[in-house]
Length: 472
Ligand SMILES: [Zn+2]
Image (cartoon, rainbow, N blue to C red; front, side, top):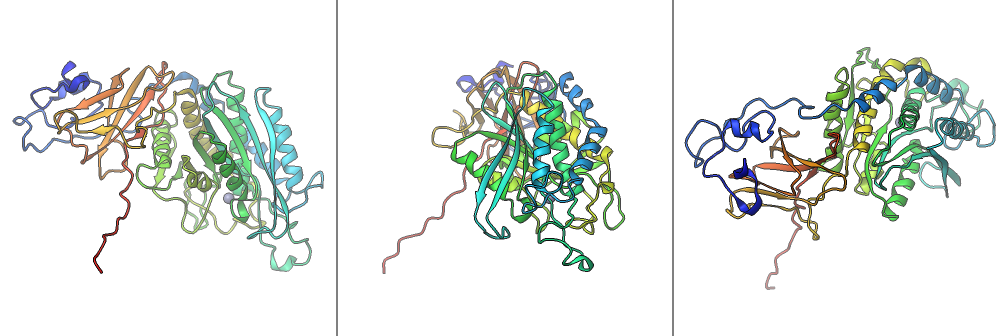
């Protein structure tokens, strides 16, 4: 084993065999060379079947309890109640006690406050002048509940609580410009209810999390992501560390407008490039769903969002934060943004399965240590060819609270991690004769109870364009 530990550039004299790899905790296939064949020069490495996602994760009973705590009845109640305000349009009434966005957000604050004294609940309001589809000066108020953790780094769960609907032609003139019925049950009372249910489950769990959890209902989404843009920009200006945003928008319907049903999967959208913060979060979500919610398929979509559509995860990605969007696989476009987006179009069993996928990822991430730092002070990855010039040498900064580290490897033309290697409590590792060009590497920190952090990838920034001076 010592021959594989990279301290001082130690290097075994031959390509390691399978037994050595297994002894090192490499899950599944051989790496960097086959167990048969001659010594390394010119050997085509054998590549066996890759481990399934979820391999190598220690299942934590505390997370299983959180998954079980999600309540279909609570989700049903929340969706019905939100739709019961008749409209939550961003420019609808703010002083009617029972109808419109003002009544909805006041109720959300009271509801969240009732869950736990540990939750810090507030309305976060910004006044903005008319712009884009905001046609008059307006207050954009996000509903925010914070569950403080041991550290300042933050993990978000979000949905947008505002709604919108076209006025049916036969009802034109019956309503003020923004007061027509817009129940927005699936878009996005479903995501808002999921966010509120996670606030309840996590704040009532009695667990002390390392990360600070933020549950937020955004406003102004339907006019152009205003609430999320305001919040993400302010967080960036304040230098806050946001490790993850789980944004849920349109997550409660199982029956497509074309009649095709799918109640057993959810799509997770993340923008590239392939090792962007959002893609690392997406991989983390699927890996943990594989361990805790195997009854529900997480389909990773290598796109920012659905074609021509937008969502509140995007402003966070603009500022370099890891943010993804959850959306049902079969949408019913005939009900979206109409008075037909009513609670009967939301299946609370399906919504609960999506909430369980969320809580497995959020809970795991919040209990785990922070991801290790793998870049140097110049922002360059601490990955090189080691002393031999032909190895893969990885170095990183240890994370507070971590007791071990786990290296993730994949071929450089492959979307998800293929090999996982546990390396113990070290801050450097060498893989002899493994090409740093042909593989992508990342490292996660592991906490005392086996909780795994996000993977910090070794990524070189793209080269900047350089023009050539020419003699005129
Ligand atoms: Zn929406």
